[in-house]
Length: 334
Ligand code: CP
Ligand code: NVA
Image 1 (cartoon, rainbow, N blue to C red):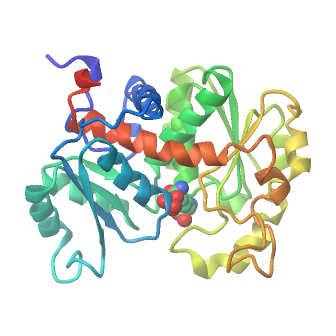
Image 2 (image 1 turned 180 degrees about the vertical axis):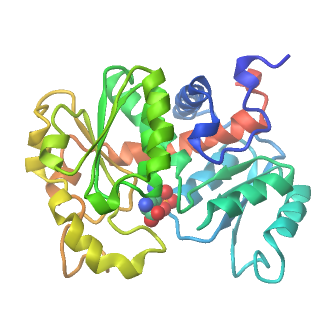
């Protein structure tokens, strides 16, 4: 019989909903353990002779590099494959590509548009498939976020997370479920047009109820963040939605994270942090913001003592490693 620790062996991760609460929290703890191991200078061989295909339809800095280094740190390999590199979805169906790559690789991490493509890869490849972001969900991001909160506050207990901005994007959807599973209160501050999808909200509410916490949705960011310990935002326009830029910027201006909003938590000087999955538009230093300046977060907050965004981005690597190890390695060797 498998011990609870081995319950993730051979498993895919499409979305957080498919993990038990204990499995999700176990992945966070495993990542902390692997992080400590790396900090102590150990580069082990937990993933020796394991090869992972990285199929990416969208750009990435963190997810791509985290996956490559996570595999390499533990003696494995990862191959970065973009749509123009392979026949994926053009000359060869997703189903056939899945069956081919599943014969060659031990696992596949997919970043792309459709959640259905990710699920089809999992269905046909015969190896674990991990969702490295789709239009609907970004589960691996939330594992890193939970690790960051746990490291910073010492535990996930008695914590309110306020997500402010596009409340129905991939990160917001996964964060809402992650908080519900971890027993953290969640408030989504978003305009009516960008409220969480009702079905996604209902699923998370059911989990939150079971864990004795609430989920709230507020159109008023200043009222919504009152009492929050984590202020979280993401870009206002996700990859693939670029045509909506002007309308989103107009709609979400009042939802910018600035020091005023941080103060509205009532927790300045206390239990408070700022998180962002990154990349973030916080200054004039990108092609997008060279004329507009900060969008979803001001430089003042981004660079403040409350901001844990670079711990968070480092934690992408440790949590993705935990996912690979939990599915492909013998954990008794750690
Ligand atoms: N947060 C995140 O997924 O970053 P990348 O797009 O750089 O992978
Ligand atoms: N919501 C963002 C997340 C990027 C990591 C996007 O999909 O572009």
